[in-house]
Length: 247
Image (cartoon, rainbow, N blue to C red; front, side, top):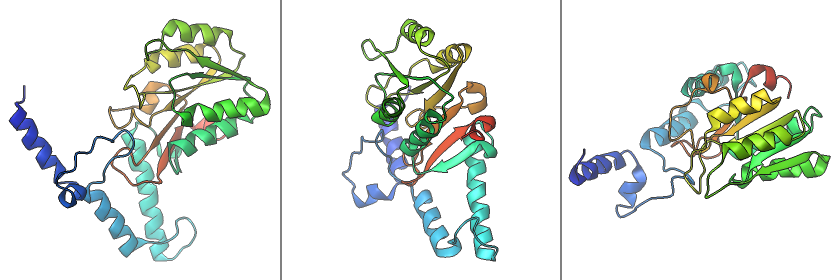
């Protein structure tokens, strides 16, 4: 077990990767669930791109544009590898919120689904869009109640059994306000067995544990760059290819 001194030395060394702590030596930053600080490697990479390779991607054939496009697609492959998916399954967005709204509006207005199921502890970004689409379309919206900040599999099963089908079940993999990690793996199986589609809000989960999209069985995964030490304004939607093609 590490001593307090060893932990202190470790964190002091870790902080040297982040320029903001050099500018603000007394800063104690505890808001990583909202957004992370950016390491020097990320800042320099952005600077290098804008000073050496900046051009519009997939829009021209001159060398600079081709180099930018190559970097863009390399990033897609890196993201796919990071979450255990394929490059063809990765869609870049502005953030988790846009990814979830994209799903809610495209799938919710497709006419293929009759209801949406969402736990009550969800972030507004994963609650309001489904609620809004239900209001617009007249489709059913089923909130799943929570007990002491946690989700009961019995409650989930009861709602899944009674909801109109086919349906979409959307939930977080780790709550931002409670720090609770629901048993989404078991819920994925339950949802699929009941003619449902499973959407995972991974905004808080992806920064905290390794994730394998294929092995997880989820149909869609949404997360943001700024919560995993990356720039703001960058998000990811990972989806099974056959489902993305239907959007």
